[in-house]
Length: 324
Image (cartoon, rainbow, N blue to C red; front, side, top):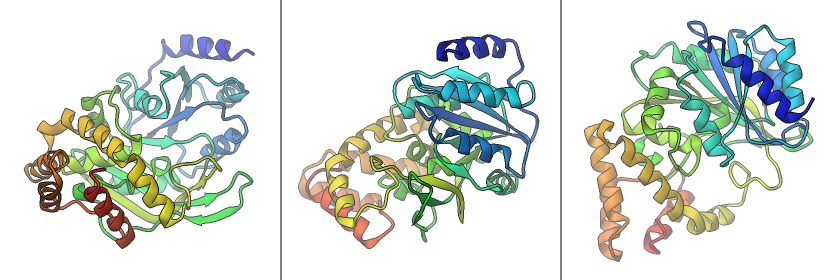
């Protein structure tokens, strides 16, 4: 079966069916692009979940391998309407995830993000759902967790950092502590993201979700228990165990551009920020444009910080060199 044929056939069927999940269930957002090598393991981990009331929404960004055939076969194994496949926007992984998150036709209580090459722990959805159900539904809330890192052959490489400080907007402005492939969030968070729009051009989709949620006074819970085996490829730029020196070098090289994107994205929801966070954001945004001493003073006033001493050293260096 051709790749185009799969999308056209599934798209035609999905246009006529109800895309709302049942109350309390989870919509999984999976973005794919030439993921055939590892995709079967991830799909199998969906089936192995101890919470079974989920539906899968896939956005494929133009795969040329067997990805779409594998998805079509997986869809045949599931009950009618459980798996839906659509064509992605073709503008990179951030735009691909945002196209699913902001699709108004998909309705659920909770939304889980998935990469194509990881493996979920069997209790991933149930752990996330249990926490989210404990929070009032009108509070934007995100669950994320630590991850077990594996290489391309499935060998364990270690674990992602275990952060000690609570999630905070002043941290989110200059650091992403969230891990997108572990994220599950509620409907109120999704409404916030839809308000900003699918075309938001943030640095990374998970950082954007962390930023937006903290900006409006929402909650993010960071589970210390790993719920995902996160596959690290040799080419990975984000999420790998780079040395402290290489992280600092990357921070200086790319940090200002990332902040430019995030500031522009935050301006879309500035009116919904809490008063305290709006003031922090205005101080941060204004200080970035100032000359040396006013810039340092303004950034100190904003209260921004990163998690570790070394990370804060890199932040200070970026501020000193105007790369913030």
